[in-house]
Length: 250
Image (cartoon, rainbow, N blue to C red; front, side, top):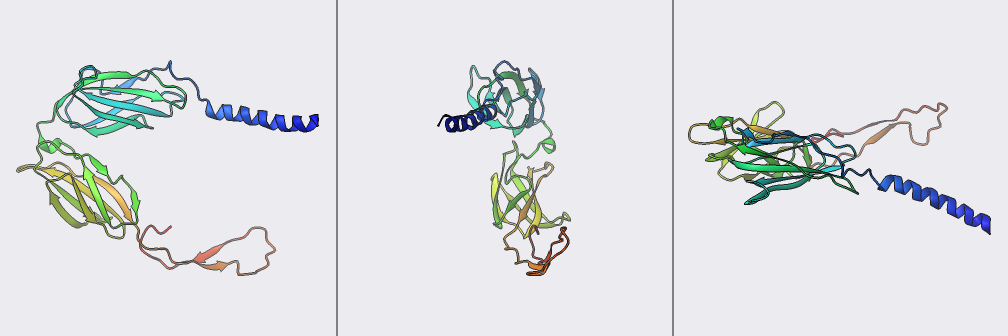
């Protein structure tokens, strides 16, 4: 009986050790995140702001917060998000800000590292940038009518949206005063881009790719090896044919 008990205990102990190695990550509470940009007390002259910081070993995600004008006297928490990368991009309006980042894993987290900066919007409207929100770049969808959304650009009176084919030929164009629109995309790969305009100037286009695939793939026809064939070679080559249809083609 004792032998059977030992046989049961040893696998259980091994399993517990394996689980401990998997579930318990290194304590990162003593680590410090180094903010790269925007630096403390810096002045940013673009509404599209890139936030970046150094990676912390064993951190699996980062919590980013942006307050206006600062966290102590915040009138607004502009952003409170968790990301898995060491950078984040967003569009902000002219104001004073404070931002901070905290590294995290399943068992611990670092202290926040923080910095203040001032955003001065570029006086040249054409130098501003439209920050696209959805759909994400390289999105694959089986729905032709897709909603697009972007962040507002200060001073814009309207937004121009274009759908392009892979040769940059304009397939559709529309304008709106809103920051979202729903358009119908063609089958296969295409691109969509948005720019902001006022009475005299326009920004550059912000562009993303999208793949629309609404067609079911055709049933493949098996070619080799033939049905119920007997092979003498251990290396077997498989081949098949299919009828070409529009879409991703995989």
